[in-house]
Image (cartoon, rainbow over all chains, first blue to last red; front, side, top):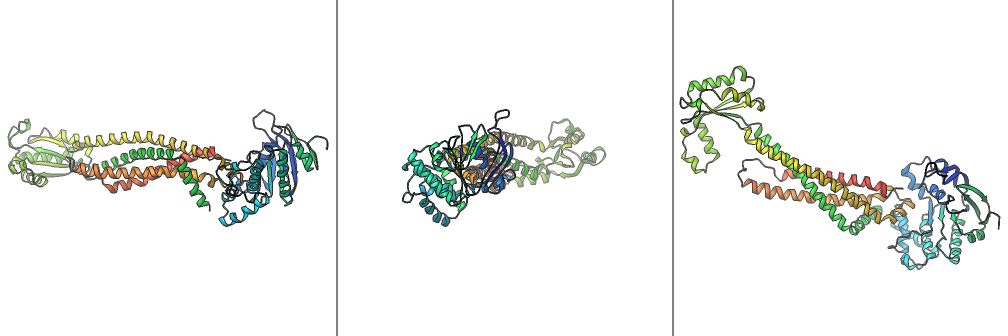
Length: 230
Length: 305
């Protein structure tokens, strides 16, 4: 689903590369954590998958597309296959829960009937039924992240990228979010989550890809957050 | 769906940015009014040239009954002198320059004057004998006036030679300089308009950065992301253009038509409202171009992937 082939990314010429000869494959339906200290290359990795950045060298395949060959006008089509969730939720403050999720469908040209049918369904899935009319500031952090996940998943993308989705949440709330991501993963969606949260990684027992200074130093099935299996 | 989305976004954008949108309307209004004025002035010059300039002639006025010019010492022009002048005009060096020579007698001159000013009391006091005969000379190239003038003005029986184009040259000079002034102001104002539209679009794009970021993230097309901002600029600029057309129309209707026609220049074939409409499409096109340039300059940077 996501395949990196000797991918390097250098932002400033002469500086240490943000990613250094990374080769990794994440298969369809996988759930993988991307761990590592700040500056280890996690965000760069995600940006490359979203094609917000382009690699300095190497090849990247996402959802069957070679990102090196994809025309820039087709990048939006690629992004429709990738849901993205961020630490800061990125909700529109003046839109209700319903409108925030609907917005994602509206701006890719879905019709009103489709939106009216799929938004309540996804809100049900993320556990926000009854809160459709609320504005983001009327919700807790965990609920806001659920809205963001609903928005990312409402178009049923085959890939879900999460950049520190629990970074702003307390441990109890984080577990709820992880359960939700796990449920989404079970529908066959590939989930790639960058995180610092050792508790969660240790609890979930999923694949762990650890980056250090732009290189993969560990790729372990059912791994823990630390170097040694917990 | 998308259309409704775009319309809503444009409407929200304009409402959120009313003062900026208004200033864009005003600046385009003023700049395009200058552009339009420059264009209309040139239309006016063209009309004058078509209707008058190419028809005007060199007039060789012949000696009247009383004149103190040296070449008229022998009294009113005689038939022999007239033949001599005609001969000079139609043979020799001038033959190739002169297209046509027309003789206007005293009687004809009087009739023409009477016809052009039927209500003038002073004209009615005159008789044909008070007029002077003349040769009206049409030149192949009006620029060659000097040669004709030099060759004829010292002949006996010639009182003076007039290049009718001289009457127009001052008017043309005024019109052309006004055009230049209007065009220069237009360029400055157009530059201000582009900068202002750029700023407006940029502010609008920045104030909706959250939306555009999400749109990019969920895979909205570039067109859908950028079009609302472009349309905001275009709507404001085109509104300005429409107002400038209205302004020009009013100016031509009430200043040029009413005022000029009642002035001493009423013999001039002046521009009218239809000329405003022939200039209008260009103004609209410039407004579109301005906002287009501004959009391209701005949007690439502020909403790009």
